[in-house]
Image (cartoon, rainbow over all chains, first blue to last red; front, side, top):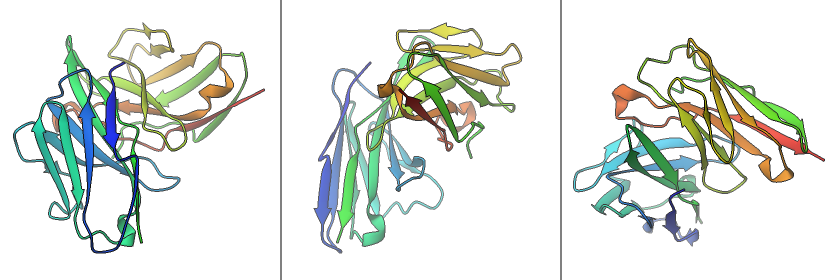
Length: 117
Length: 111
């Protein structure tokens, strides 16, 4: 399957600072990328959908000013957690989608573990 | 909300087939069923997807009932490395094709 990478794989930051997470599709072009968040022992929760060159669409309850998403190219999307607080500590996972034939294939990155102290 | 229902956990003996059921009784005619799995602290791994026909690849087989209200993922010869949480997801056509994860089934493969 196709490969999606994330950087960094883990990060520790102080409360009040901002953190940027990169997501790249390595061997395919993805017109649509998704960002998920996962708390311990819970399922993945979709945060937002981003299409290359346009503004992201956020799920209900996700603060768009806090979680800034930029999808600058067909292979790169970034998530910036602004003014991070301890409750933002979580596992952030990106996903990239490509159309194959008449259906979509969607691949996930390895995740980024964010710890806010 | 997720459109699927799965048992929270299952056990399987190593070397035997693992059959993971999924109910999706409200699925629409143009919505695909996707299966992913997540090994602890990793991103989900794509397994297989289908619309109405049974599908098979190098990892698994997907059996979809004729009325499309349920499906079964089959791992033909489970190994210890197949221990993971398995998610059955219906891609919601009228919401931009998002994948909304439910709680999944925690499969434990035992020696």
